[in-house]
Amino acid sequence: MSERKMYKAVCSDCGRECEVPFEPDPNRPVYCRDCWAKRRRQRRRY
Ligand SMILES: [Zn+2]
Image 1 (cartoon, rainbow, N blue to C red):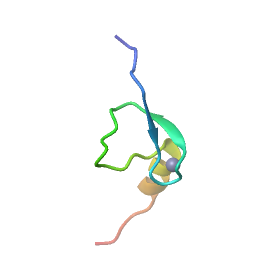
Image 2: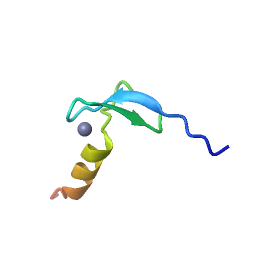
Image 3: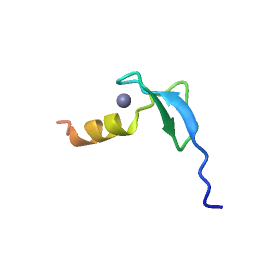
Image 4: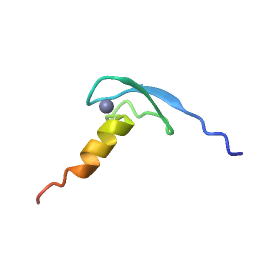
């Protein structure tokens, strides 16, 4: 039950192949861990 299914995807930011714990949505960009962290760090102003 602790087994995680990983899906292969290509990061929309750096273009690297990565694995994500969710099924990639073709209509949405997928990011690798590095890019997720990068994006999380950036705070956008409203
Ligand atoms: Zn990336």
